[in-house]
Length: 173
Image (cartoon, rainbow, N blue to C red; front, side, top):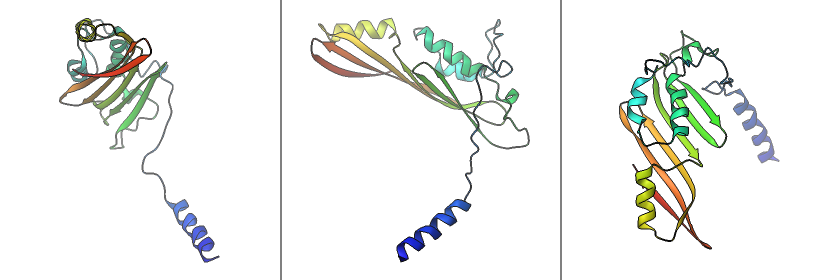
């Protein structure tokens, strides 16, 4: 009985504790937050583009990275100019998942990106096929981690298939 009473008291105290991070969900279709005008190839977060863009990367990845680079948190409904905080924005497109953290000035501090069912760069796929004769590409995943001021870490995880056999290969770029 004592355990039950102490449990109820404990639950009562934990109910008084508030979260330190506000959670807000926004629709990415908010046209004010995403600038599509990119005729001069300048992005709101140009440094992110410089550290993550690789000419041989999949067009699907480039398209989603452009959305992150052009996202303007300052024009979002949740933006509070008086708050000295960071904003975590999650983008999803099909099975692809991107999480970006922006500071109070709209500068991208970091991102974690997970892509599925993408094309490998030609140089990587040709080397992989030469190193694994008789094996076929079954699935390709790409993880990209970016931190402001540091080149992005790009990791491809590839599932190879040879009849009933499968093997996983990890490629760091």
